[in-house]
Structures are given as structure tokens and as C-alpha cells.
Image 1: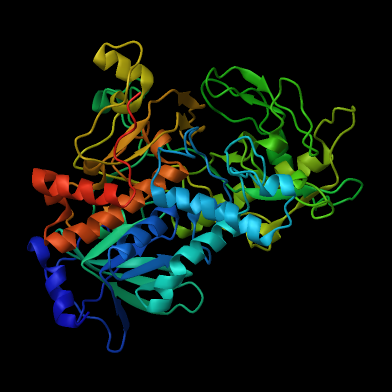
Image 2: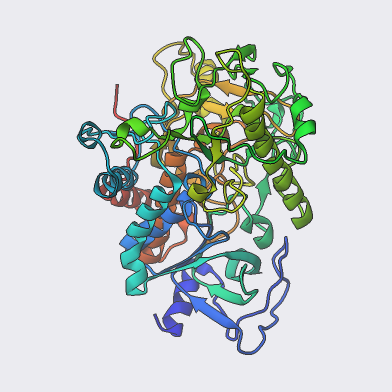
Length: 574
């Protein structure tokens, strides 16, 4: 695209055209007041769409835009794309119908490709190879539990043709450090290489915030909320009486481990082990006891619940064996001798960190809380190796081995914290508990059975998960209750004011409560795919995204387009 066409695209729908030379910008919470200028020779890249954040929402947005013939720049602050599925080390949390419906066709294609990768490259047993719905880890959390590196490989395969053709630029180890804004329009972003410190100016008609914490929102002056809204604000059944912007869900530093019987892989005692060994979460209602224990608060009842642990995967009777919960490799699926033991991912109640909030934290505080969360996870591992009660009456499993090689790190932990909650845009439409929560929905509709989630006229996707909020920085215990198969309304993807910035992660127009069911892997993917498609459609029709929702003919046309490309907008009728 030549510069003249690029400037014309930027000014579509009343936006402010990009002046030349481009202005210099700083990290700011408000739009800049007037033009200043870049230093001479500063590197610049242009595309139809710039996406900040290479998680599942960012990757899906890129793929949707690319299949609709746009050029894309995708930035990622770590060296792995894939977000919660790869750099954060979390096997997918999905609903029970995922194999056939309730997600986009592209997401299901991704899942099929993961299974194909194992069939092509791993020494599976014949029985495992012939399973149509192969689950490499046989984990109980999902029908498809697999290694982070395989997800990374498949995502790279999906993006490879576009990178090769030059239509996609992926900037790994690049963090967005500033934005240039004029009025309601973002003109450019500044990305900084984490390796060299070099700066690159990224300009485009449209920008997507797919970062894990909604980093672009304060930089661009986009209105947003954080934490918990009050019941007075949202009328939500499970909202607190008083709002608390700092009350956010715990984050987790996940890790992978295997078990080698008879070996000794006990790590050095973590420096904060004594603290975490005696720590009890300060939450209301009260926690079940100490955090490092084979018991926790039942998320639904908040009563103490016993858990089991045995690294050879044996049944623990009526207790959940934590080893099997997020197991990503079951050695029984592979030819004898391939694995010394199973491999599991540790994202458990025992390593949820709630002593600090990462949203809005300074660099110093961010690093402090991440380091403490790492100490918690390492302390959990050390406790499992040395003190955890065994069924035979002994203590500890010395053969547990930290598998940092699978996470791509030297310290053995995931590359990035598993983030459950982000800044959220003040949206044209906000999804409330009354729209998707089973009990709240029954109250507002008067239907006590056979209820369905709200039907949104502007639906651009579907999803499902129960409303699942982990213990929080504000001292809440679990908030966990039933929801209904829901839709993703276009209005929740549109900031009230900004014209050309769209969200594609956990930063959409939900509340603290409803984020609990919109934050999972396939929903984030669906959000990103809808947003990438919306940018392409808006450019093609020469309108701003808000107009797509406001004009019935445009909305109908957009919904027809995305349905033709495999995006479901409604659940099948029961």
C-alpha cells in the first residue's frame, strides 16, 4: 500500500488523517494535545491493522484480518505467541460441546491441527493414534490437554504463509511503550524491542489491544474500568455492595513437572518457603486452612474440600487427583519407553497469587509480585517433593521434576503470569450477570427452568463457561456459579468513544462478574476473530466499526460475512 492510500484509509469515517512526518509520542493516559515530531530516521512500519499482544485473541484477530486480505503487524512482549495456551502454560478450559459447536471453525481447525501434530511427530500407540478425539494428556480439565510448545508450533504453522508473503509482520519481544492520539483516533504506537531497546513506530488505520492487561487503554486515553463494580451500578446478584477498582482475581505462575520414580530431583529450598508454608489466604468466607495443603475451599460451596495427589495418576477414590487435572502428557498414549512418567501442568488453587495486583502496577511492583508468585509456585513444588502426605503414610515425592524445557524458561516456570482479569473498556454495551448468569437470568425473566442467555441482536460469536472467579486481591474467596451458553455482542467490543481501537482479550465490555465466563481460551479466540473480521469489513465498507452496529443493513451484512467464514453467532436451538 502506498502512503497516499494509507492516509486515505486512516481518515475513513471521519477519523483524523495521519500527518507527515509522524509525531513523537509518550506513554500517556490522555490524548496528546498537539503535534510534535519523531526524531529523524526513526524506524516506521505501516499496515492495515496493528495488533498489540500475541495471545489467542491477538492471533485470531490477525488470522481473520489476513484471510480478508489485510496487512497486519502483530507485536508480542515475550518470545512466544499464544498467550494463556503457550507462554502462560495453561491447557485449554473449554465447554463440553467444543468438538462439534460453540466455537469458531478456525478454533476447531486449530484443535484438529494440534491432534494431527501429535499423530505426525510423536510415537503414539496405535490405540491413541486412532482415537478421533485424541487427548495427549488425558487431563480431566479438557478434551484436549497438550504441551505449550505444540500449541506454539501449530499457531506458527497457521501464520507462516502470511509471514512468508510479507502480509504479516510479527515482532516478538516487543512491548508497546506509547501511543499518539488525536481526539478519538489513535494514529500510531511506539514499540520497543526488549532485546535491543530499539524503537519502532507502528501506524495503521486500526489498532487492536490484545494485551493481557489492556495496556493500550490508559496509553490511548480510552475509558476503562478495573476491579469490581458495585451492585448499585450493575444490579448484578453477585456483585458487592461497594465497588472496589483494585479488587481483581489472583494470577498464577504455572509450571510443568513430571515424575521419575526412585530419582531425587528436589530443588533448593525456595527463599520464601517458610512464609508460604505457613500462609493462609485472608479471604471471606474463610479459606479451608493453609494454602500449601491437599485441601481447598470448594468453589461452589466454599466448604473445605479434600484433594488427592499421586504422580502416577492412580485413582484417589472420591478425591480429585490433582496430578490428572491438567495433565498434558499421559505416557499410556505413547509407545513404551517414550516417557519416564506423565507430565502435568500446575495451575492449582495452591499457587494462585493474590497479594498484589498487576493492573496498573509500576514496573518495580510488577516485577516484585511476579517474583513472589514464582516463589509461591516453587514453594508448592518443594512442598510436594518433601512434605506432601503420601497414601503409604510417607511424605513427599522426591522424583517430581521441574520441566522448564517444556515452558521454554531457565527458571522452570511459565514465561508470563496467567492473567485472569484485565482493564475493561467502557463499552457501547456491557454484558451483565442478568444476561448470562443462570440464577440472575431467571430472576429477570421469571423463568425458573429451561432458561437461555440473553439473545443479542448484534451477536458476533458464542461461548460458554461457568462464571468462575478465583480468590481476589480484595479478599474474596471463590465466586463460582452457573451460567448459560451465551453470545458475544458486538456492542461489548466497541469503546464508547474511540473510533479505531478495539479490544481482543479480557478487556471487552464485561463486568468483574461476567468476565468470569468470557475469559477462557475459545471465547478469547472468538472475540479476536470477530474483531479482526470487523476491521476488514469496516475498511471495505468505508465506515467506522460503531456504524456497523448502528445500521441494520451493515450489521446484517457483517453477520452474514462472519457466518460464511465459520463464526457461529447463535447456539443451536434445544
